[in-house]
Amino acid sequence: AADLTPEPIRWLWPGWLAKGKLHVLAGAPGTGKTTLALDMAACVTSGRALPSGWRPKAASVIVWSGEDDPGDTLIPRLIAAGADLRHVHIVGDVLQDGQRCAFDPARDVPKLAAACAGIDNIAMVVVDPLVSAVSGDSHKNAEVRRSLAPLVELAARLDAALLGITHFTKGTQGREPLERVSGSLAFGALARVVLGTIREQSEDPAAPRSLVVARAKSNIGPDGDGFRYAFEQVELPAHPGVHASRIAWGNALKGPASSLLSEPEKPEVAHPEAADAASFLRELLTDAPLTAKEVRKAADDAGYSWRTVQRAMKKAGVISKRQGARLPALWSIPGHTLAPVAPVAPTPECGATGATGAEVALLEDGEVAI
Image 1 (tube, rainbow, N blue to C red):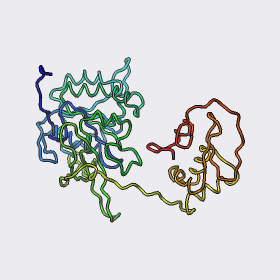
Image 2: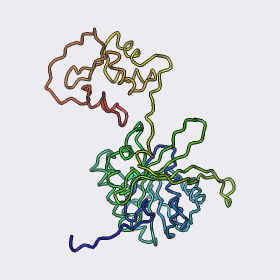
Image 3: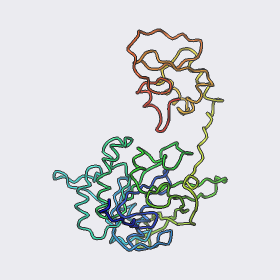
Image 4: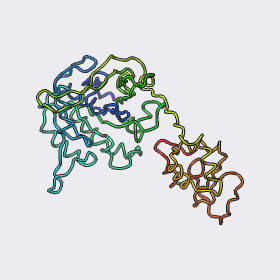
Protein backbone atom coordinates (compact mmCIF):
# COMPACT_ATOMS: atom_id res chain seq x y z
CA ALA A 1 0.00 0.00 0.00
CA ALA A 2 2.91 2.35 0.67
CA ASP A 3 3.79 2.14 -3.04
CA LEU A 4 0.35 3.37 -4.15
CA THR A 5 -0.66 7.01 -4.53
CA PRO A 6 -4.11 8.12 -3.30
CA GLU A 7 -6.26 9.50 -6.11
CA PRO A 8 -9.39 11.66 -6.00
CA ILE A 9 -12.69 10.49 -7.51
CA ARG A 10 -12.97 11.85 -11.04
CA TRP A 11 -16.48 13.19 -11.43
CA LEU A 12 -18.41 13.61 -14.65
CA TRP A 13 -21.22 15.13 -12.57
CA PRO A 14 -20.00 15.84 -9.03
CA GLY A 15 -21.77 13.63 -6.51
CA TRP A 16 -23.88 11.88 -9.14
CA LEU A 17 -21.84 10.37 -12.00
CA ALA A 18 -18.24 9.27 -11.51
CA LYS A 19 -15.83 8.43 -14.30
CA GLY A 20 -14.90 4.77 -14.57
CA LYS A 21 -17.65 3.63 -12.14
CA LEU A 22 -20.91 1.68 -12.35
CA HIS A 23 -24.15 3.50 -11.53
CA VAL A 24 -27.65 2.06 -11.33
CA LEU A 25 -30.83 4.03 -12.08
CA ALA A 26 -33.83 2.16 -10.67
CA GLY A 27 -37.49 3.00 -10.32
CA ALA A 28 -41.06 1.99 -10.93
CA PRO A 29 -42.45 1.82 -14.48
CA GLY A 30 -43.67 5.18 -15.74
CA THR A 31 -41.10 7.28 -13.91
CA GLY A 32 -39.10 8.00 -17.07
CA LYS A 33 -35.84 6.29 -16.25
CA THR A 34 -34.75 6.06 -19.89
CA THR A 35 -35.75 9.67 -20.54
CA LEU A 36 -33.74 10.72 -17.48
CA ALA A 37 -30.68 8.82 -18.68
CA LEU A 38 -30.95 10.35 -22.15
CA ASP A 39 -31.27 13.83 -20.65
CA MET A 40 -28.02 13.29 -18.74
CA ALA A 41 -26.41 11.94 -21.90
CA ALA A 42 -27.60 14.99 -23.85
CA CYS A 43 -25.98 17.29 -21.29
CA VAL A 44 -22.71 15.39 -21.61
CA THR A 45 -22.66 15.57 -25.40
CA SER A 46 -23.48 19.27 -25.59
CA GLY A 47 -21.90 20.62 -22.42
CA ARG A 48 -25.34 21.80 -21.28
CA ALA A 49 -25.89 22.32 -17.55
CA LEU A 50 -27.13 19.40 -15.48
CA PRO A 51 -29.90 20.08 -12.91
CA SER A 52 -27.38 21.03 -10.22
CA GLY A 53 -25.95 23.73 -12.52
CA TRP A 54 -22.74 21.79 -13.26
CA ARG A 55 -21.64 21.95 -16.90
CA PRO A 56 -19.64 18.93 -18.06
CA LYS A 57 -17.10 19.23 -20.85
CA ALA A 58 -18.66 18.07 -24.12
CA ALA A 59 -17.80 14.42 -24.77
CA SER A 60 -19.06 11.29 -26.50
CA VAL A 61 -21.75 8.95 -25.15
CA ILE A 62 -22.46 5.27 -25.98
CA VAL A 63 -26.13 4.21 -25.76
CA TRP A 64 -27.50 0.67 -25.94
CA SER A 65 -31.20 0.00 -25.51
CA GLY A 66 -32.80 -3.39 -25.77
CA GLU A 67 -36.31 -1.94 -25.44
CA ASP A 68 -36.56 1.32 -27.44
CA ASP A 69 -36.18 1.92 -31.16
CA PRO A 70 -33.46 4.45 -32.05
CA GLY A 71 -35.40 6.07 -34.91
CA ASP A 72 -38.73 6.78 -33.25
CA THR A 73 -37.77 6.94 -29.57
CA LEU A 74 -34.09 7.39 -28.66
CA ILE A 75 -33.05 9.96 -31.28
CA PRO A 76 -36.20 12.11 -30.91
CA ARG A 77 -35.76 12.20 -27.12
CA LEU A 78 -32.08 13.10 -27.48
CA ILE A 79 -32.93 15.91 -29.89
CA ALA A 80 -35.65 17.19 -27.55
CA ALA A 81 -33.11 17.17 -24.71
CA GLY A 82 -30.63 19.25 -26.72
CA ALA A 83 -28.06 16.54 -27.45
CA ASP A 84 -25.24 17.03 -29.93
CA LEU A 85 -25.94 13.95 -32.04
CA ARG A 86 -22.43 14.01 -33.48
CA HIS A 87 -21.25 12.77 -30.08
CA VAL A 88 -23.98 10.13 -29.60
CA HIS A 89 -23.13 6.57 -30.64
CA ILE A 90 -26.02 4.06 -30.68
CA VAL A 91 -25.01 0.41 -30.34
CA GLY A 92 -26.46 -1.52 -33.29
CA ASP A 93 -26.11 -5.07 -34.59
CA VAL A 94 -23.04 -7.28 -34.39
CA LEU A 95 -21.58 -9.65 -36.96
CA GLN A 96 -21.75 -13.21 -35.62
CA ASP A 97 -20.56 -16.08 -37.83
CA GLY A 98 -21.18 -13.99 -40.92
CA GLN A 99 -24.71 -13.06 -39.82
CA ARG A 100 -26.01 -9.77 -38.41
CA CYS A 101 -27.68 -10.23 -35.05
CA ALA A 102 -28.79 -8.05 -32.18
CA PHE A 103 -26.14 -6.87 -29.72
CA ASP A 104 -26.19 -8.96 -26.54
CA PRO A 105 -24.57 -7.21 -23.55
CA ALA A 106 -24.16 -10.59 -21.86
CA ARG A 107 -22.00 -11.82 -24.74
CA ASP A 108 -20.76 -8.99 -26.96
CA VAL A 109 -18.96 -6.56 -24.63
CA PRO A 110 -15.54 -7.48 -26.15
CA LYS A 111 -16.89 -6.45 -29.57
CA LEU A 112 -18.21 -3.22 -28.04
CA ALA A 113 -14.79 -2.55 -26.49
CA ALA A 114 -13.17 -2.96 -29.90
CA ALA A 115 -15.66 -0.53 -31.47
CA CYS A 116 -15.11 2.01 -28.68
CA ALA A 117 -11.38 2.03 -29.44
CA GLY A 118 -12.18 4.03 -32.56
CA ILE A 119 -14.23 6.71 -30.75
CA ASP A 120 -12.56 9.65 -29.05
CA ASN A 121 -13.36 11.00 -25.61
CA ILE A 122 -16.11 8.64 -24.39
CA ALA A 123 -17.42 9.96 -21.06
CA MET A 124 -20.62 7.96 -20.53
CA VAL A 125 -22.09 4.53 -21.39
CA VAL A 126 -25.83 3.85 -21.00
CA VAL A 127 -27.11 0.24 -20.78
CA ASP A 128 -30.89 -0.24 -20.80
CA PRO A 129 -31.86 -2.58 -19.22
CA LEU A 130 -28.85 -3.57 -17.15
CA VAL A 131 -30.29 -7.00 -16.35
CA SER A 132 -29.75 -7.96 -20.03
CA ALA A 133 -26.02 -8.07 -19.30
CA VAL A 134 -26.56 -11.01 -16.93
CA SER A 135 -26.18 -14.32 -18.75
CA GLY A 136 -27.48 -16.46 -15.88
CA ASP A 137 -29.89 -15.98 -12.99
CA SER A 138 -30.20 -12.26 -12.19
CA HIS A 139 -31.19 -13.16 -8.62
CA LYS A 140 -27.89 -14.90 -7.84
CA ASN A 141 -25.08 -12.69 -6.56
CA ALA A 142 -22.22 -14.67 -8.08
CA GLU A 143 -23.77 -14.77 -11.55
CA VAL A 144 -24.59 -11.05 -11.49
CA ARG A 145 -21.07 -10.10 -10.43
CA ARG A 146 -19.47 -12.38 -13.01
CA SER A 147 -21.74 -11.14 -15.83
CA LEU A 148 -21.33 -7.44 -15.08
CA ALA A 149 -17.53 -7.65 -14.75
CA PRO A 150 -16.82 -7.06 -18.49
CA LEU A 151 -18.99 -3.93 -18.55
CA VAL A 152 -17.46 -2.60 -15.34
CA GLU A 153 -13.96 -3.24 -16.71
CA LEU A 154 -14.86 -1.48 -19.97
CA ALA A 155 -16.09 1.59 -18.09
CA ALA A 156 -12.87 1.68 -16.06
CA ARG A 157 -10.74 1.32 -19.19
CA LEU A 158 -12.64 4.11 -20.96
CA ASP A 159 -12.76 6.22 -17.78
CA ALA A 160 -16.46 6.64 -18.51
CA ALA A 161 -19.49 6.72 -16.23
CA LEU A 162 -21.49 3.50 -16.76
CA LEU A 163 -25.22 4.00 -16.13
CA GLY A 164 -27.40 0.87 -16.05
CA ILE A 165 -31.18 1.14 -15.96
CA THR A 166 -33.37 -1.30 -14.04
CA HIS A 167 -36.65 -1.52 -12.11
CA PHE A 168 -37.90 -1.53 -8.55
CA THR A 169 -39.33 -4.92 -7.62
CA LYS A 170 -43.12 -4.96 -7.74
CA GLY A 171 -44.86 -4.76 -4.38
CA THR A 172 -41.87 -3.42 -2.40
CA GLN A 173 -43.36 -0.09 -1.35
CA GLY A 174 -42.35 0.80 2.19
CA ARG A 175 -38.91 -0.83 2.01
CA GLU A 176 -35.55 0.90 1.94
CA PRO A 177 -34.86 2.15 -1.62
CA LEU A 178 -31.72 0.03 -2.06
CA GLU A 179 -33.66 -3.12 -1.13
CA ARG A 180 -36.19 -2.41 -3.88
CA VAL A 181 -33.75 -2.74 -6.79
CA SER A 182 -34.90 -5.68 -8.89
CA GLY A 183 -32.85 -8.87 -8.90
CA SER A 184 -29.85 -9.79 -6.82
CA LEU A 185 -28.48 -7.50 -4.14
CA ALA A 186 -25.28 -7.54 -6.20
CA PHE A 187 -26.74 -4.89 -8.53
CA GLY A 188 -26.83 -2.40 -5.68
CA ALA A 189 -23.62 -3.67 -4.11
CA LEU A 190 -21.52 -3.41 -7.29
CA ALA A 191 -22.77 0.06 -8.19
CA ARG A 192 -20.88 2.92 -6.60
CA VAL A 193 -23.96 5.14 -6.90
CA VAL A 194 -27.59 3.99 -7.00
CA LEU A 195 -30.25 6.48 -8.12
CA GLY A 196 -33.93 5.88 -7.45
CA THR A 197 -37.05 7.39 -8.97
CA ILE A 198 -40.63 7.58 -7.68
CA ARG A 199 -43.85 9.40 -8.48
CA GLU A 200 -44.83 11.60 -5.54
CA GLN A 201 -48.11 10.88 -3.79
CA SER A 202 -50.84 13.50 -3.81
CA GLU A 203 -53.98 13.86 -1.70
CA ASP A 204 -55.76 15.03 -4.84
CA PRO A 205 -55.78 12.12 -7.31
CA ALA A 206 -56.71 14.50 -10.14
CA ALA A 207 -53.75 16.80 -9.51
CA PRO A 208 -50.60 16.28 -11.62
CA ARG A 209 -47.89 14.56 -9.61
CA SER A 210 -44.24 15.42 -9.95
CA LEU A 211 -41.49 12.82 -9.92
CA VAL A 212 -38.38 12.58 -7.78
CA VAL A 213 -34.89 11.25 -8.44
CA ALA A 214 -32.56 10.85 -5.47
CA ARG A 215 -29.35 9.06 -4.50
CA ALA A 216 -30.33 5.87 -2.71
CA LYS A 217 -26.68 4.95 -2.18
CA SER A 218 -23.21 6.34 -2.79
CA ASN A 219 -19.97 4.68 -1.75
CA ILE A 220 -17.88 7.53 -3.15
CA GLY A 221 -19.72 10.63 -1.99
CA PRO A 222 -22.80 11.87 -0.16
CA ASP A 223 -26.07 10.03 -0.60
CA GLY A 224 -29.58 11.36 -0.24
CA ASP A 225 -30.80 14.65 -1.76
CA GLY A 226 -32.36 14.82 -5.18
CA PHE A 227 -34.44 16.76 -7.68
CA ARG A 228 -38.04 17.00 -8.74
CA TYR A 229 -38.80 16.60 -12.41
CA ALA A 230 -41.69 16.23 -14.82
CA PHE A 231 -42.27 15.26 -18.46
CA GLU A 232 -42.84 17.61 -21.38
CA GLN A 233 -44.14 16.54 -24.78
CA VAL A 234 -42.66 18.62 -27.60
CA GLU A 235 -42.73 18.59 -31.38
CA LEU A 236 -39.27 18.65 -32.92
CA PRO A 237 -38.97 21.93 -34.88
CA ALA A 238 -36.84 20.44 -37.66
CA HIS A 239 -39.02 17.32 -37.90
CA PRO A 240 -42.70 18.27 -38.20
CA GLY A 241 -45.01 15.58 -36.87
CA VAL A 242 -42.32 14.00 -34.71
CA HIS A 243 -43.07 14.34 -31.00
CA ALA A 244 -40.89 13.33 -28.07
CA SER A 245 -40.84 13.53 -24.29
CA ARG A 246 -38.14 15.36 -22.39
CA ILE A 247 -37.34 16.17 -18.77
CA ALA A 248 -38.40 19.46 -17.18
CA TRP A 249 -36.27 19.79 -14.06
CA GLY A 250 -37.76 21.21 -10.86
CA ASN A 251 -36.32 22.28 -7.55
CA ALA A 252 -33.51 20.58 -5.64
CA LEU A 253 -34.52 18.45 -2.64
CA LYS A 254 -32.69 17.86 0.62
CA GLY A 255 -33.00 14.86 2.88
CA PRO A 256 -32.27 11.14 3.14
CA ALA A 257 -33.23 8.81 0.31
CA SER A 258 -35.50 6.81 2.63
CA SER A 259 -37.65 9.94 2.94
CA LEU A 260 -37.40 11.32 -0.59
CA LEU A 261 -38.06 7.94 -2.20
CA SER A 262 -40.69 6.69 0.23
CA GLU A 263 -43.93 5.28 -1.12
CA PRO A 264 -46.79 4.04 1.05
CA GLU A 265 -47.60 0.36 0.82
CA LYS A 266 -50.55 -0.25 -1.45
CA PRO A 267 -53.61 -1.37 0.50
CA GLU A 268 -55.25 -4.62 -0.40
CA VAL A 269 -58.23 -4.06 -2.68
CA ALA A 270 -61.39 -5.61 -1.29
CA HIS A 271 -63.06 -8.25 -3.44
CA PRO A 272 -66.13 -6.67 -5.04
CA GLU A 273 -68.44 -9.66 -4.49
CA ALA A 274 -67.42 -10.94 -1.04
CA ALA A 275 -66.76 -9.45 2.36
CA ASP A 276 -63.30 -10.99 2.58
CA ALA A 277 -61.11 -13.78 1.30
CA ALA A 278 -61.73 -15.81 4.46
CA SER A 279 -65.30 -16.48 3.36
CA PHE A 280 -63.99 -17.57 -0.02
CA LEU A 281 -61.58 -20.03 1.62
CA ARG A 282 -64.19 -21.50 3.95
CA GLU A 283 -66.58 -22.05 1.07
CA LEU A 284 -63.86 -23.47 -1.17
CA LEU A 285 -62.66 -25.99 1.42
CA THR A 286 -66.05 -27.03 2.81
CA ASP A 287 -66.30 -30.27 0.87
CA ALA A 288 -62.70 -31.46 0.80
CA PRO A 289 -59.09 -30.35 1.30
CA LEU A 290 -57.21 -28.99 -1.72
CA THR A 291 -53.56 -28.59 -2.57
CA ALA A 292 -52.03 -25.12 -2.45
CA LYS A 293 -51.81 -25.17 -6.24
CA GLU A 294 -55.53 -25.90 -6.55
CA VAL A 295 -56.37 -23.16 -4.04
CA ARG A 296 -54.30 -20.64 -5.96
CA LYS A 297 -55.97 -21.49 -9.26
CA ALA A 298 -59.41 -21.09 -7.69
CA ALA A 299 -58.33 -17.78 -6.12
CA ASP A 300 -57.06 -16.49 -9.47
CA ASP A 301 -60.34 -17.45 -11.14
CA ALA A 302 -62.27 -15.66 -8.39
CA GLY A 303 -60.17 -12.52 -8.63
CA TYR A 304 -58.31 -12.74 -5.32
CA SER A 305 -54.59 -11.98 -5.06
CA TRP A 306 -52.44 -14.76 -3.61
CA ARG A 307 -51.15 -12.47 -0.86
CA THR A 308 -54.74 -11.72 0.21
CA VAL A 309 -55.56 -15.43 0.33
CA GLN A 310 -52.44 -16.19 2.38
CA ARG A 311 -53.31 -13.50 4.90
CA ALA A 312 -56.87 -14.84 5.18
CA MET A 313 -55.76 -18.34 6.16
CA LYS A 314 -55.76 -17.72 9.91
CA LYS A 315 -59.06 -15.85 9.89
CA ALA A 316 -60.68 -18.69 7.96
CA GLY A 317 -59.20 -21.33 10.27
CA VAL A 318 -57.33 -22.96 7.42
CA ILE A 319 -54.46 -25.30 8.21
CA SER A 320 -51.77 -26.42 5.79
CA LYS A 321 -50.23 -29.82 6.40
CA ARG A 322 -47.74 -31.92 4.51
CA GLN A 323 -48.89 -35.49 3.93
CA GLY A 324 -45.42 -36.69 3.08
CA ALA A 325 -42.00 -35.38 2.17
CA ARG A 326 -42.68 -35.64 -1.57
CA LEU A 327 -46.39 -34.90 -1.49
CA PRO A 328 -47.90 -31.41 -1.73
CA ALA A 329 -49.27 -29.60 1.30
CA LEU A 330 -53.06 -29.79 1.66
CA TRP A 331 -55.17 -26.85 2.77
CA SER A 332 -58.14 -27.80 4.91
CA ILE A 333 -60.52 -26.50 7.57
CA PRO A 334 -61.15 -28.25 10.92
CA GLY A 335 -63.49 -31.21 10.68
CA HIS A 336 -61.86 -32.90 7.72
CA THR A 337 -59.92 -36.12 8.28
CA LEU A 338 -57.00 -36.34 5.92
CA ALA A 339 -56.25 -39.73 4.40
CA PRO A 340 -53.12 -41.41 5.79
CA VAL A 341 -50.15 -41.85 3.51
CA ALA A 342 -47.31 -44.31 3.49
CA PRO A 343 -44.24 -43.15 5.41
CA VAL A 344 -41.34 -41.81 3.37
CA ALA A 345 -37.81 -40.77 4.18
CA PRO A 346 -37.80 -37.33 5.82
CA THR A 347 -36.46 -34.37 3.84
CA PRO A 348 -36.15 -30.70 4.81
CA GLU A 349 -39.37 -28.80 4.32
CA CYS A 350 -39.43 -25.70 2.15
CA GLY A 351 -41.55 -22.69 3.04
CA ALA A 352 -43.22 -21.60 6.25
CA THR A 353 -46.27 -23.77 5.53
CA GLY A 354 -44.31 -26.81 4.45
CA ALA A 355 -44.77 -26.10 0.76
CA THR A 356 -42.71 -27.98 -1.75
CA GLY A 357 -40.20 -26.21 -3.93
CA ALA A 358 -42.67 -26.27 -6.83
CA GLU A 359 -45.29 -24.51 -4.74
CA VAL A 360 -42.89 -21.85 -3.52
CA ALA A 361 -42.27 -21.03 -7.18
CA LEU A 362 -45.93 -20.02 -7.40
CA LEU A 363 -45.37 -17.07 -5.08
CA GLU A 364 -45.04 -13.61 -6.53
CA ASP A 365 -41.60 -11.98 -6.63
CA GLY A 366 -40.73 -10.66 -3.21
CA GLU A 367 -43.46 -12.64 -1.43
CA VAL A 368 -42.86 -15.10 1.39
CA ALA A 369 -45.04 -18.09 2.17
CA ILE A 370 -46.94 -17.36 5.39
